[in-house]
Image 1: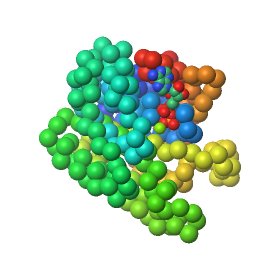
Image 2: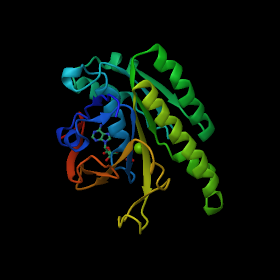
Image 3: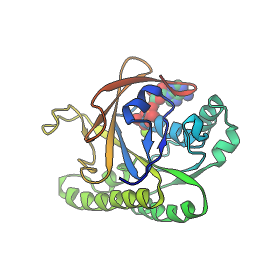
Image 4: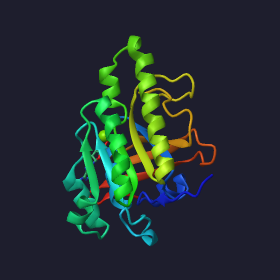
Length: 238
Ligand code: ADP
Ligand code: MG
């Protein structure tokens, strides 16, 4: 494998699970049901990437593609403050774009390349990768077309990650459906959109109150264990 870099999640247990944090040159798919903390993790990473390397970051900027209008500047500022960063500067270091359709989302990924060429960007977030595709291609009859488009989108993201040494983090909301393949009660809404490629899947699920459980699936080189973390005012913590 080529040289990769890692961005700490800010949660020691989660970093250990990930082998040090989310990787550049890879797509990390964060999967979980509503409220499991996918968007909170994306916010946290957009801050963590800005920290110097000795504090788990890459001293770099982030691009945040928001498809569900769940990006909250105040939340970024809150997390940045808790990490000792200037909140306004932290927000300024995130290139934010709202995607209004799946086509727009794909165009934004293409445009992200020119931002990456001009700025020190080490993280690209797409939260959620699946929402537009699911609403524009509903039902079984559109599944093949949706999957084809989604495959192209994910292939674009993988290429971008590798070509520019960027960590790509995408989120995928799961449906409460039985999954006969993995014996897991939850199944990613996009199916196995990341079955191929240099990538892995982080599953989040709710536990009591603000506690969340994380697990990694489909990775040849990550441990199979589970870890827990909490979502607080300061962001995600052990
Ligand atoms: P998902 O994107 O997986 O649907 P989110 O990342 O939006 O889920 O997580 C929502 C959870 O994060 C909620 O349980 C909420 O209580 C918690 N949360 C959001 N903001 C804060 C905050 N400022 N302080 C504490 N918890 C928060
Ligand atoms: Mg969300």
